[in-house]
Length: 259
Image (cartoon, rainbow, N blue to C red; front, side, top):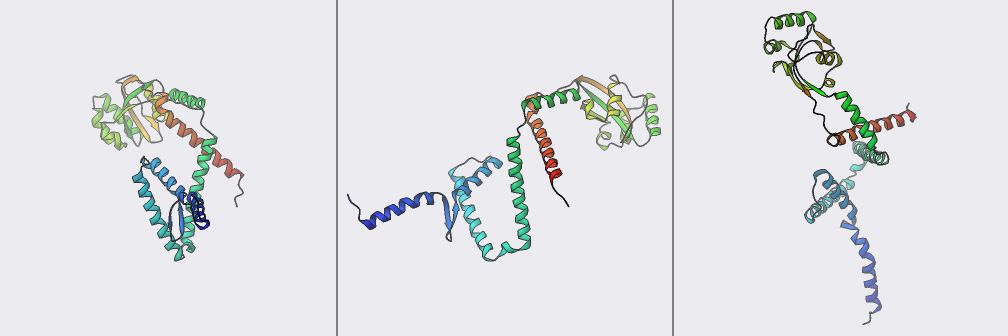
């Protein structure tokens, strides 16, 4: 079988253009939409919404990109890209994209080490302590009111009734109940007074904090339910990453010439 010269040129031209056409999703008014753009959108949809990469999703993405191209061409035809507000918004969007890329690059090059995660977990356990406390409190504005409440409680007054006058609305409606918590959950003067009590015991004197004066009653004590390292590892990793990123930002700002 032989090809005529003209037929041979047609075949060779078609073969040469196949890879180029394969790189394009579609061509709108002579402008190509690269397939890589669809790949990127599919990747984003999969990451954000957990959508699987299916032919149906690809078809939806193709339609969306064609619609966008039609609209952007019309916007360009109207010269909207030269509008000052549009330029400012585009600049902000560009900044956001580049900053996300910078953060991703920094995180990739500065991974959080397992040893650092373990050290942070050990610090968390030491701070949390090995006990949890079930307490009630009544918070008032001045010391005299707190002392009067203590006198009434010692005379047989019900804590739940007197707690209604507490400044803490969350616990006041629940008899002053603070639920189960570790001492680290409270400010230091409060936690120091709390751990000195025995179950069923009441503070003899008001406890002063930046919030006012507290009357504290300890209900129960139990062994703390500290989450395992595996349970909190994602949160610790994220917290350490944020700490590194803040230090990186501060370092860059310190080097910058700001006028």
